[in-house]
Length: 373
Ligand SMILES: *Cc1c(COP(=O)(O)O)cnc(C)c1O
Image 1 (cartoon, helix red, strand yellow):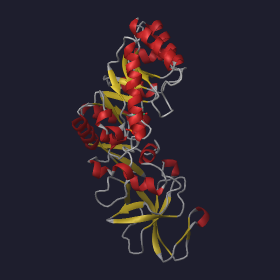
Image 2 (spheres, helix red, strand yellow; image 1 turned 30 degrees about the horizontal axis):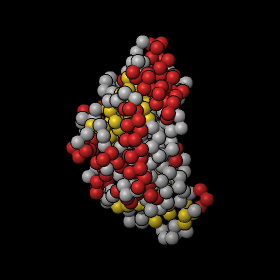
Image 3 (cartoon, protein in one colour; image 1 turned 60 degrees about the vertical axis):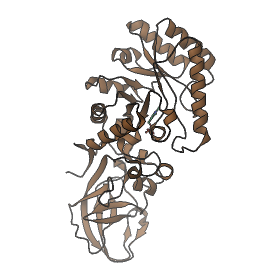
Image 4 (cartoon, protein in one colour; image 1 turned 30 degrees about the vertical axis):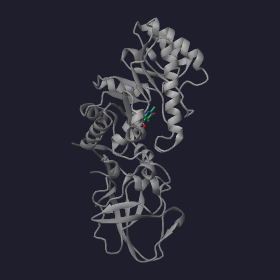
């Protein structure tokens, strides 16, 4: 190992996919946007497919095309394409497109006419999140999409929406979104067209709401072995998920410092006793949150060593304790599944006032990914 590396346990990804297929009894769309939440787009897509995922979901067209050029041939949905996107290319690569506006529908249909390829679309409706999805345009959109489907200018592959609060299963908002989803679907069906696949659930809904699973679930965070929300839904372990990502780093330097030493920029931490500090060769340029507090740190040789002072761009300092056996060049675990006592992604998230999603997706591309089976 050089300075730092991420290790991805591919068998954990496979186990998480299989678990959700077994428990929901529906198909899984493996959500691999954002470089598979930092885990590596193509490798994760491949292992998820091998484990039984029948769909791949991404935000951007370029992510979808990368999957195709690496030989992945199952259906891929891209749901965040700007109007200026190269839709001809999307159709030539057989990418399903999420459609959430009249303008986008028209662009996609124009590409269909130019290429002679019938666009495969998934209509996205806004059922209460007020982010993506058709809302005020619905009456007009409904007529247009129905006419386009009946005249075979598009293939109506899917009908979908997204939950805002699925990680709070008790919230009435979920029930209301579900109701709105089925109501809008009825309106669509009343025009004489029926989408082949309905999909609404993200990880949180897939794990908690059997009424929302429909034809497939769009599985993101849980596939990576992380809980959608530790507080409301329980930890990875409680959910039976296996975290796939371990982050290791080298101690660039270990040295003994006296009591009263001011550590890092701003001298925000001052040692209270003589101790050994370790300089970890990673910083915020690698995705280590600058605002992480000392409730997290690294794991070395059976012990946790808390962060000391502020995280810098390429390095941060930990308190190893005076009796530590660590020496310059030793390897530490920044986070892992938590099986041996190391800090977890969730520990880092709570120490940085963020969520586990952000911790894993923000790890920079300059940190190499290593894959274990
Ligand atoms: C990211 C995303 C998902 C996956 O959400 P998780 O909470 O990670 O399971 C599902 N659907 C859409 C539309 C998304 O953008």
